Length: 184
Image (cartoon, rainbow, N blue to C red; front, side, top):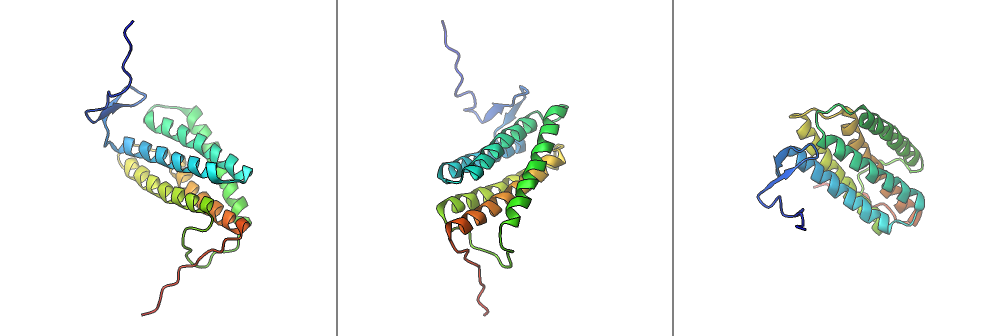
């Protein structure tokens, strides 16, 4: 029996979406999907470091949501009310986490330097990646329709990751270092 070759089909710079559509690997949609994958990978790294089980569960749920969002982006113009409703509910959950963790933190009056505890530092990296993914999705939304809930979700992820990093630093007793600009 002859084995089916599954790897190496994209060696010439093209790949296939779930719809069967063949696209170049530098396609805006694939760039956004790659960013979602990178964000999920950094969140996965954070999960391996973070000791707080509640935060670990939140991060795992976010990873699940990122796969759903990626799946939705792959399907582009197809009508998928089930996925759209799922993303809408995930956005509501995400917003509740933002409110919850924001209420646990002192008000921020200045910019802070990313860092502190190693788990907070990884969350800051994930936050920066989330911001890049958001920029890629905005660019893609100028070419193809992207559900507003997807853009809002990615925006809120970066907010939540920032809050979680600050919360961990607070819990671990790591002082937030404020950025102070020297007056010339």
